[in-house]
Amino acid sequence: MRVVFSGLALSLAISFHSVVASPASSLTKRAVTCPENFRNVVFNGGVSTQPNWPGRYSFLQGYGINDWIGFTIDQDPKADAVTNEHQLRIVMSPTQVSHAIDIVTSPTAPAYLEYLNEPDSNFNPGIPPTTAEEAAAAVQPLLAADTQTKFLSPAPAYTGSTYLKDFFAACSAKGTPNCLDRFHAISVHAYDADPEKVIQAIEGVHAQFPGKPIWVTESSPVSSPDQGCELSEQGVIDWMNRAVGWAAGSGYVERWFWNSGEDGTVYEGRPEVCNPSLTTLDSKETPLLEAYRALCA
Image (cartoon, rainbow, N blue to C red; front, side):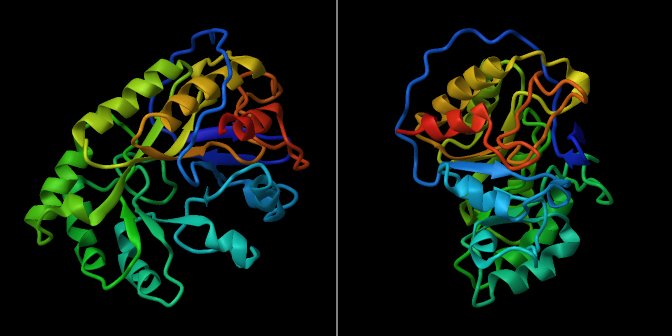
């Protein structure tokens, strides 16, 4: 669980592995040709307590942001139709599979649906960990549904584990032959103050599933205030240009969800240190948001 301190509220974000702080080298910024709808954002638990929600998402759209994650299967009744349309909804627990079937077979079925957020961890409040075998058994009715919705794999908290391989093997054995083929993309969470380690983590997942696109559904340099990231504002921009720029040109990373779209200051009282926020508490753009916009040619 990532604890994020912002000016008025304590918000929670999901993360997964330890961060090794390293100074950012001076990187030459250059725009790259990004895949369609490549730039996206994560909104954490406290976003609705911050001013200008859901207008904050509309503001981000003007900077080239496409979709957003809010760690829920349901849409926000306060949001307008466009905001809801661009939400990447997540089946947060196997207990939500029946609800997910109703959603993907409805006339307003979403284009994509992610199945489980960090099921191998206890980072999700009120949701116990789910083993790969349990997840595989629970997903069978969803995969059998008559729908055009494309599914995204579970997003493990620990990218170096065998969770996904175990999940797909069990899923195939439990009634969905070639289960991997039923998922459009592999979801990845990647955090580290060293962008090279994030790149290595993503490359490792790709090596396991070379025929699948990857969606990085959470990433930034830091996931918890106890991890000692000391990057400056320019250091975080350099991190973004290196890691996200590499992903855009990788040929297999289709989408990147930057964490966070709201004011997600990590170190209380030190907003200048390793701050991944794309917007301020009063919904103004940060230099990082300007860099995110400029990243794609």
